[in-house]
Image (cartoon, rainbow over all chains, first blue to last red):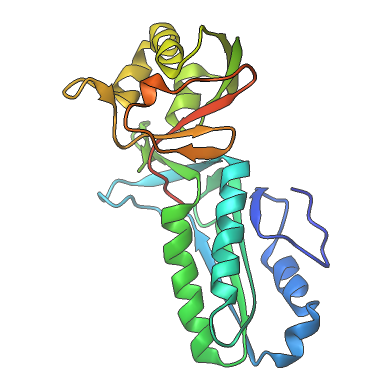
Length: 148
Length: 92
């Protein structure tokens, strides 16, 4: 995808192609933003340990773009129907990542803060289960593993 | 006919390719025979030895649409179809 900074579409992007401030800018460019009282953001980053406690040194993200983009759009359309939600964008990055680098952004504009917090949480649970994205953790002992 | 297989995650690591064309006769069983003969390490990812079926964790995608068939080996493919075998997802 090639981001138009005034209208960033939710979906899969290459690492480095888009930053959180671009997404917030795009949300603020929505003519309906005047109805919002808050903008909420979630940033998923690379952690230094696996779920089994192994030391992680790098991460790779692979994606089936066409399928993942469709699922991300569906999640956004579903959550836009929730009470008080003005706009939502989900951006998942792919490529090779070092520790603490950004992997995914969820940005929600809502009329009131509670609605925004709730929908951020729902969006994260949904994208983790529903979009065609896979991560491979690389460990300090030279091994690596795709997580499922 | 010629169909194209898209590779993701482990499949990409094992094949060292993003996609590949195969010439087959007509159905998914033909394609799977060729694929597993060419890349033996894919066997344990796709094929469930106990049930002698495609592993139930695998999602089959044809032309960007998920396919839900009881016997996927009998799915008839068309020239130009794009197929992917997907393992469970793990977003960041």
